[in-house]
Each structure stands twice: as C-alpha cells, then as structure tokens.
Image (cartoon, rainbow over all chains, first blue to last red; front, side):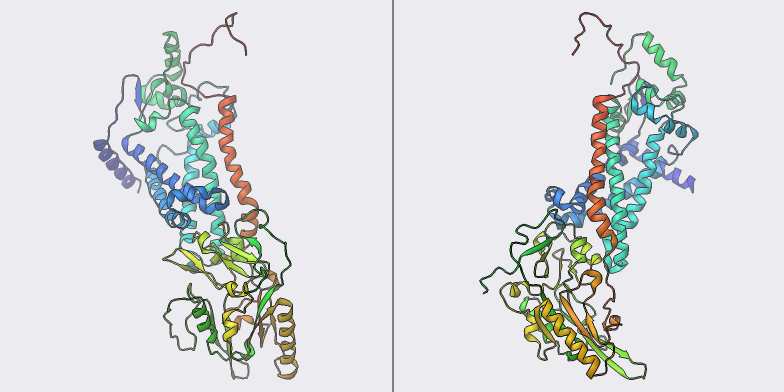
Length: 248
Length: 302
C-alpha cells in the first residue's frame, strides 16, 4: 500500500515541479516543493472559506457580519459543506504527501518535554535532534488529520440532516463538529504566528519553497545535518566567527 | 381587528438577553384542543390550512389508507394521520389524529436554532418561524420531538404551522378551527381548553368505557399549546408516532447555551496568547543574530 502511495506522491510532485518553479539561491536549502505548497494553500483557502461561512452558522448573533461575504445566511449554509469537502480532499492529499516525515519519533517526545523552554524563548536554537518537522508541528498535523475525519463524518450527518440520520445523530454531531472547529481555530493562530512574525524567515518556505541555511540550522538542526552533512552548531558558530548575521 | 396588541414576543432563537418589550403586558396563553374521539377524518382542516396560508397544490401520496401523504410538508402543515389499531379482542379501532406543530412551551426547534430571530415564541404560546432570518441549517428539525419543521430546498428555509398567528393576532381563531364541522377542534385559553379536555376525558372514562382516556399535554417539554384528548392516553404512539415523553436533545441545552459561547471565547485566547507571546517573549530569529549592544552612556533606557 505504502508503495502505491509513494508512487502517487512522486508522480504528483514531479508533475507540479514541471508547472511551478523551485528556485534555490546560494545559502538556501529546498524545503517544500511545488506540490506541497500548492496543497498547503488550497487547504488554507478552503479552511478559511469553511471557517468564515461556518462562523455564521455557529453563532449568527455574533458573526452574522461574515455571512454577506457568501451572499447571506442561507447561501453560506448551503456552501459551507462544499468548502469543507474541499478542505478534507486537499488535506487528505497533504496527509499522503507528508505521512512519512510526520512519523512520530522519540526525538519528538523529547521535543514536547522541552516545550516550556521553547515557548519561554530561553533556548536560541532547537534541540540538535529536531528533524524536518518538530514535535509541535507533528502534533498539529495529526490533530488536523483526526479533526478532518471528525469533520467528514459529522459533516455528512449534518449535511443530510435529521431526515436521514435521526435527530440524535444530528444533535451529537453538531457538538463534535464544533469542538473540532474550536481546536483548529485555536491551532491556526499559533500556526500563522509561528510561520510569520513568531519565527521570521519561515513564511518563504511556503511561498518560494526555500529557506536560508541559518533558518535550517536554527529551527531544524537534524534536517540541516541530513541535507548538508555539516554539524548545525559548528555551522552556526562558524557564521558567527565570520561575522555573518542571519538575514531574515 | 383587535385594538389590543396580542402577539408579544417571549423568546427569540439565537438571541442573548431578554426580548425587547418582554412582559409589558399580560397575555393569556392560547391553546388548540383536538378531541381525537370525535374526529371524522373529513380533512376540512387540511384544506382550510392550505387555503388560508395560500399554499400551492401539493401532490398527494396514496398508501392504501385515507391519509393524504406520509408526513407534513413545507407547504402542507396540517395532516390527519389515520391509524388502525387492533384491540386485544381482534376488533379494529380507527384512530385519526390531526398532526401539526404542537407549539411546545419549551420549543426544541427554538433551542436548536442558531439564527437570531429565526424562531420566536410569543407570550401567548405560539412558536413562529420568521423565514427572513432563517439560514436553512435544519437544526430545528433535529430539535423537534414531533418531526414538524420541513425544509424547502428551493428557498433554503424551513416552514411549519404558525397556529395562524396572523389570525390569532387579529383576534380570530386559526383556520383549521373555523373549518372543523364536528367540534373536534376548539380554540381558547390554555386553562379553558385544559378544563374542557379533562372534562371530556372524564366523560369518556365514566360513560363510554374508555378506561385509559386522557389528555395529551406532555410535561417533559413544559406542556404544549395544542392538546389532544385521546381514547388511550397511555399509548399515544398508536396515533401515528406521538411520543409519550417528548425530549429535546440535551446537547442543545448544555452545548448551545453554555459551552458554545465559552469555548468560542476560549479559541480567541489563541489569538491573545500569540500576541502576548510576541510582545513579552518575542520572536525567535535564525542564529546568529546581531550581538547585543554593549551597555554604555549612549544606551537609551526607557
């Protein structure tokens, strides 16, 4: 099975590389290929469409000003399931694309134990065993995988309604759907913050697909070592000796 | 036209706080009494409902009974349900029940509805849908214990019996009441209708041999503003799925009025959290970052 998934992913990555570009300048490393970036932004697009149309259904007395974007309450309600379906489909493809690097490792468990220091900002660099994705990214990824499955099942029940699934199925699905949305809403603030102003230099990974070497040895040292063969701490110290300052 | 304002709002769906103008005037609770023991199944009420509410023709479904269609529709709010019940002695009892919105005192549709002002409850007990505010989410369908609200796919809105709030507001009885030829349907205050219903049930028990005759006014939803006199009040399910103890899913009470606003606010803490992180701890930048300036007389301390 895994080989079929790998073959599919490889074909998709190559097809998208022919359409888009992966420009990597001197001092940079390739991080996300065109296919990954495409999926990321499609997921983001459908996430926000579903989120904003969903707000109007969640609490109209507070968020009814969102609904005119979609042509009013009834149309927002009618379009919301289709936005959700788009989100689930593209995130499903992203799951296949990322299933290998998102595998949980003992390093991730150590990373999670180190979370307090990371949030507190007392450590300038990530632990040396932090790979392509760190523990926090993996937690968020698997939360969205679980959340998307919950969305899909409860969403279909809510979409078809009480006529097909009975009133209790709808009444319970409604809670699970909302809980999943609230967890993801909390997560998206953290995701956007860390990928923009929270850790400068990250955003370009999803725009151009390349990151600076300084970014790589700071935030993903084990990945840096894997792709360059150099020790991240030594590389950083060498840059410091030469008076180089990491550009953002 | 009545010179008195008779439709005062008691509750509004998806609305925090009290309804504007609440409790300015006392208003008698209205009630429709349906005596199933003298219903002859003439369907005059069905026709009157369609006529008064100016509904288009709705195709009927023949299923070997006298029933017009299996369930009410978005444009057919009043349906007589015909049920044959076989007694223990083998004889058949033909049960006819006029099915429509029950106008619950604690309406499940209103509890489930997230849209501000899409469902209102008047102080006289009528539960009315305001289609201009309806977003068509159909949560009311799952909130209703009687399967009454019906979705219109072309307008994307939900419709149901209004208890002729337009007529009642003008001091008239609902259209179905006006059309009933046998006196099976009565309309008045809740107290009066309950009194008549109990008297009739007593009469059925004492003089007609219906030992289990009684009044259907389920207290699990605070009573209804449509009450039935039944030959057998212990088995209302026989009358085409009338639940004995109708319930509103707990999720609509616990989730919607408590956790939903609380958790919605909680999610916003994510936004507040990252902003506070940015201004206190600050961003993490790729290393090596520029060295800190040596402290000296030129350092501005603010």
